[in-house]
Image (cartoon, rainbow, N blue to C red; front, side, top):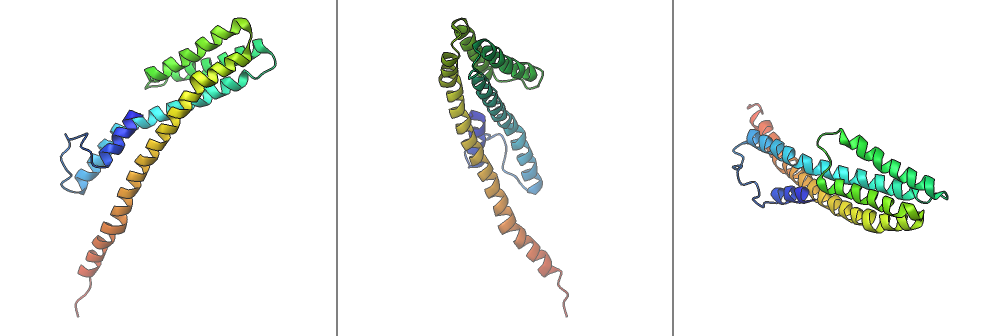
Length: 178
């Protein structure tokens, strides 16, 4: 996902969001981190949508394994339609790319239904829709992992280096003189 990758690059030092000056103090740093979180949240939600659609399409694909072709096409279509209907009322809506993926899956079902060849429908659905979406979700998961590692590195650096120094300085300054 491009948004997740952009967030990773931003956190690794690439100046994609040069409009933000460097933090002058910790309050600025917290504000900048909150802004970063606000900017990457849509990318994270998009990955969640991709995964939800992948689960839905995999379930529809499994419905096509039923011994009764007519009911298997009906059930597969129902799974896809229920997902699309459920997501239609949620803001933000699915991306244009994911809506196209849903339509492509519906078209495969519509094109193979007259032949009642559930096996052909399942194969096409898997190779043309599910498999490419699997690859996309795997890429996005890797980018999310990079993002999480960058945040973890920032947290670990602050907690393991700066925080002990600050607390030691406070403790040293608070010692009573004889």
